[in-house]
Length: 84
Image (cartoon, rainbow, N blue to C red; front, top):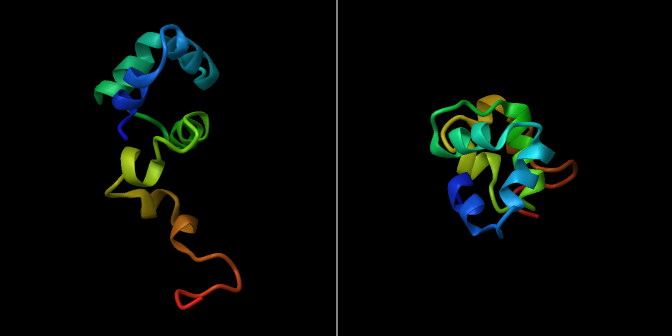
């Protein structure tokens, strides 16, 4: 789900609360959702957490370069292989 789709799905007033929790103005949040303002890696993680995983940094915010930003997400958990 894109950030825009997620924000559009929220109840009235929830977008302003989301922006506050993210530490940005509602206007800047709207710009990020429109793709006209950059979203820092730190904010991507926060968006993923605040959206309850509906907007992910891997699939939604950085689908083409997430492995360069968060290489640890590509490593399987310790003690597990792809065959487990």
